[in-house]
Length: 309
Image 1 (cartoon, rainbow, N blue to C red):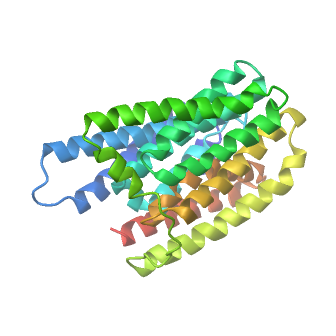
Image 2 (tube, rainbow, N blue to C red):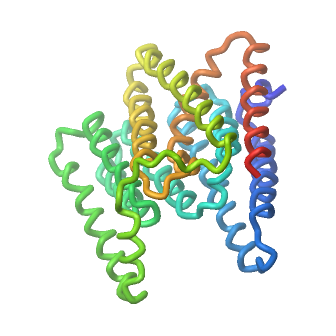
């Protein structure tokens, strides 16, 4: 059932993902809401959900526009499952905003393979990444992906190497302008997030540990499988898949470096890993096995979501 539903792109799939994500998001937010929560709180949460749902559509756009999968919605499904594994992301607005901006950057970098408007794409991607760093500082680590994409696609033009620094200057000017308006409050907030933490003992319950262990195992399996499968991709697609692999590695790096670490910080891995996992699932020829894999992942996601309420 699940395999047949998501094996093709159709409007019904977006409706299903939208309804399911809204239900799970609402349950989590309601469970966390304080008795004194007012309509402003719920409107803010609604805005975050819209941003989270928009992230799903950006991921879907990246997948289909660039032919990274065979015209299916498995990436959307996997992104939803990963959200259920680590539902703490629902309560972290900075991670939701930052991850949304990084997906916008990834969209521009993947499209570099067309070799059209390359300088604009490099600037846009760099701009989104530096902007994301204002919400979650170690998102700045993602700027490495810009230079990797330049190496893969447009390394011969020296001007392309300068563009990220122009984007940094633009974001810096905007930041100091906003900071001066808000009486330096932005600067103090940003500086409080710039330290590195390797404290991984942040778990509130055993289920968070199990979810992380299982997610790590799934990630390694998908990653290694895709790493060896890249050589079987069309030559004009290999650079795009390499970019996805590097983006996943950098997402892990952001999680490792992040201060005030929690499982929600893994959200920066969700988009790339969903694309990698979709490539694995579509290769499964036996439909029964494919159904078992999808139902098992969804079942585990729902289980961890419930146990972490």
